Length: 207
Image 1 (cartoon, rainbow, N blue to C red):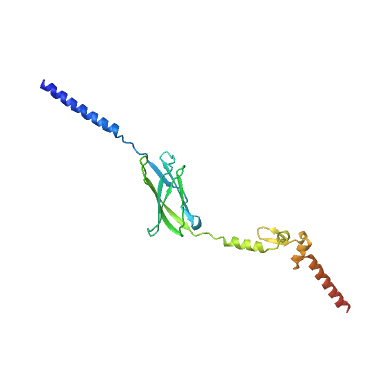
Image 2 (image 1 turned 45 degrees about the horizontal axis):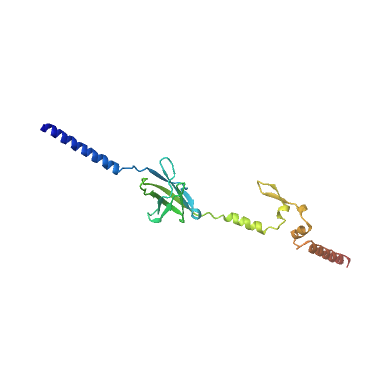
């Protein structure tokens, strides 16, 4: 009889322990967080006047994660932090940060701390900033074009595009344009000067 009581007591203890474990599990469920991936999508080489860092945050199925804060840290070649900022992802999991960096080499670190549903993740990338390109030659060419007379294209005919050879064709000019080509303000002034020179020659010949 005592032996049976002992067995019953042991069974009761086991049942109580099992109920306690099951109850604890039900009341305190453990939800596994979903892994994430943050990546830098902008170019590794950029220019001083157009620098922009672009990132994207997704889960492992490439589903965008929106409205999350991502930290961005950029250090120069000496290890000094030159950018320490945060961005917030949009509906596509993307975010941008405008850069104002001087010419040089940098290291970019992008990190996401995670939340109750997602784990954190981080990535790094080297960044090279090149000097801003100044189109000096194009500007000079534009200035030269501005200084050309309006009839320039009419009289300048290219005969050899490779060597740049050209001829001057005056047949396409109006009377005023032809006068300007010869250095007069208009056709009327050219006629007056032509008549004056003709008169001077006549008088000189018959004197």
